[in-house]
Length: 392
Image (cartoon, rainbow, N blue to C red; front, top):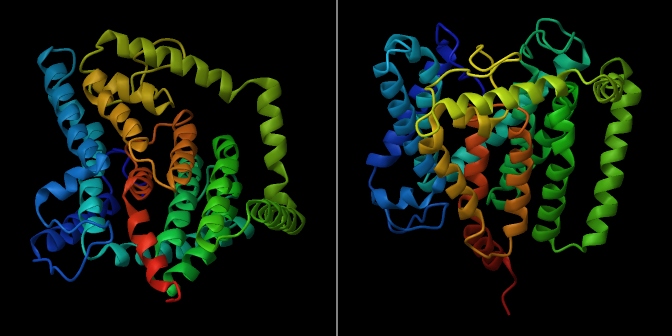
C-alpha cells in the first residue's frame, strides 16, 4: 500500500497492486446486486452515481485529469519532453485507479470482506515489521532507519499511522467478531513498528490517533469518557514502558533523536527551505502546475527535491486545477452533522498533520484511510447496534 513511488523501472508489486484492484472492482461492478444485500456503505443504488457520492472517488478521477492536463501543457511548452513525465506520472495514475477500485469494492457487497482482509494483512505485516525491529534483523528492518524493509522510514511511519486510524474504523464498524479481534490484535504491532521508525511526524500525530481509538471505545461500548482516558493512558504507558525496558537499543533512541533535531535544526531547517522553494515552484505555473515530478530544492526551486509537504508538492505539480478538489474533500467532512463527526474529524486531522511533513498523495494507504473516514459507515454501524439491542 506504499509501493507506488514512480522509481524506474516500475516494480512488479506496483503492477500487481493495480491489476488486483482493477480485477476486484471489475468483478463487483459488473455483478448484478441483490436488493436483499445492502452494501456496507448504506446505499441501495447499484448505478454508477452511488460512487460519485464519495469525495475520494471524485478526487481520484480529478487527479488523473489534473496530472494529464499538467503533463500535456508542460510538454507542449517545450520545457520538458513528454517522455520524461511518464515515469513520475505513473504512480499518480496508478494510485488513482487503486483508489477508484477501493471505493467500488467498499460500496459493494465485498465491503466487509475488504475490511476483514485489511485487518488480517495489517496483523501479518505488523508481526513481520515488529519481529524485524525487535531482532534488529538487517534483512528485514531497523538495524538502522534506512535498512531492510524500512529503506524509506517515512513511508513506514505513514503506513503505521494510516493503519492505526483505519484499524480504529474497522473496530468501530465491523459486523464480524473475527475481524474485530484481528484488528484489535494488529493494533499493538502496528504501534510498535511505527515507533521503531523513529519518525518525528509519527510521534506528533500519535496522540490524535490515540484520541480516535479512545472515542471509538467510548462510542461502541457506551463507556464513560473519564474511564476511557484513564484506562487508555494507563495501558498506553504500560505498553510503551514495557517495550522500552525490553528493547532499549531500539526505542531508547527515539527521545534523543527528537531532542537533537530540536536543538540542532537539521531536518526541520531543511524542510523550511524545501517548503519555501516548493511554493516558489508553484508560482512559476500556478494554474496547472509544473507536471508530475519533484520541483523543490534546498538552494532554489527546480533542483529535483520534493517539498516534503503534500499540499505544496501537489500545488507545484498540478496547480490550482488539482488542488481545488482537496479543499472540497475537507468541506465534505463538515457537511453532515452526525454523532461520529468528531471521530472522523480527528482521523482526518491526524493524517493532515502527517501530510505537512511528507508527500503522501501517491500512496494508496493514505487514500484508503481517508475513504474509511469519509464513507457513511456510521449508518451501518448504528443499524447493527440497534439490531443487537435487546427487544422490549
